[in-house]
Amino acid sequence: MVNVPEEILKKLSAYYNLSKHGKVSEVVPPWIRNINNMSKTDLEYETRDAIRTCRDLRRKITELEYEGERLIPIKSKREKFTEELQREWTYMSYYLYTLFLHSGIDVSEEDFDEYLREETGSRGFITNLAAKR
Image (cartoon, rainbow, N blue to C red; front, side, top):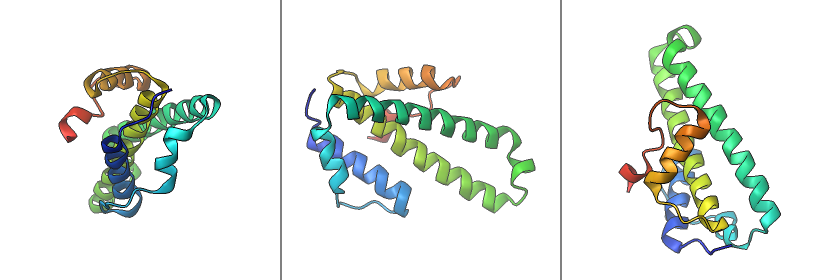
C-alpha cells in the first residue's frame, strides 16, 4: 500500500466539504488523513462500498436526467437536487480514486475516469476529474 500525497488528500477534503457542507474548506477532516493508515481489509471494503455508491449515484443522476420533470415537477428543486447529486458524485468518485492510489494502483485521473465510466455503466465520461484540477 502506498501513502496518498497531501495534495490529493486536500483535494478530496475540498470535494467532501463542498458535498457535505456546500462550501470548500481548507480543513482536512481526520478520517481523510487516516486513509493512509487503512488496513488492506478496510481498503477492500471501502473500495467495494464506494463503487456501489458511485453506481447508485450514477443511476439517480441518469434517472433525474430522463425522468426529472415527472419525479420533481418544480424546476428549481429539480436543479438543486441535480446539483447536490453532482457534488456528491464528484466527492465519491474522487474518494474512490484516492482509495485506488492508496492500494498502490498508479493511475492517472483520465484512466480512472475511463475505469469508472465502465464500472458504472455510463455512456459518457462522468467524473471529468482531469477537468477539475
